[in-house]
Length: 123
Image (tube, rainbow, N blue to C red):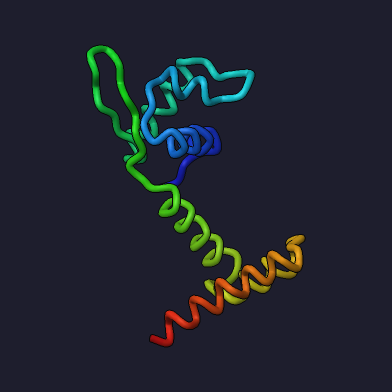
């Protein structure tokens, strides 16, 4: 299941804060801040989608993510590779390295990461 753009923005704040009450979430937004009712609606939808849960403290709720950021974005990237690059990670890597404005240092960093993964796979 996916999040809408506004849900994803709220989720970014929650991942950063790890646990948060409504006031903490509202403070995390830049101006102009959304209405409390808007954030409450987004949280309800995200709870229904099993992305967020909460603990109750009296009348207050402390929200926390049920889905890790890396898991969510890994699923997104894998979906992107499947839907736009014929399920070919090498096509995606080729596009990424040629069509983005990567510096020489960034390309060398990527090469180190790839070399490290190749060594792991050999074992």
